[in-house]
Image (cartoon, rainbow, N blue to C red; front, side, top):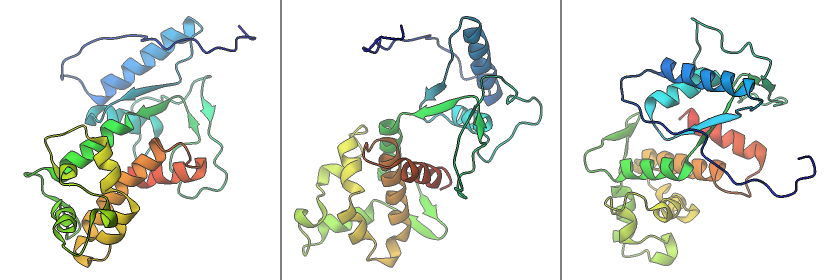
Length: 223
């Protein structure tokens, strides 16, 4: 009702299980099918949320036009399209007109990035610069530094605790980034930690301004 002051409780619109035998285009068709049938029932689906699955990420990019496009069918001719007013943001690469918005489980995303950093088998690089947890371990092993200097504990570097979000906050603190930046050999690790920090700032921090949030989102997406 127009005079309703209390928001209704959230609810699950649909739940289903699928096999892995599908493509990003199948996901797009499913979203469009849900959208079309919901409109017929006077329900407007604003967007979709998913975890860090590659097929869903590609579907999001195709739908949003973020460094991706579809040539076989036009999904952007719809009376429900809304326009994003960005002014003169030269770094904003999405189409101005969108049918959906997409949400990401930021906690899940940053813990996945942390787990990849702490993995004993993953070999990460930016150009010729290595991304490794050893640069963080060196801070803990440095006898000239204390916890007051970096705020880290040994448990922050334990890969067994795969959902340790507080560890993500500590390894991306300004103190840690400043210490990491002192060593030219750790530039790759610095960039990776900065990426995680930008994701936290753009998706989770409530005090981040809208313009700063959008900039950091696009910086992270272009990394």
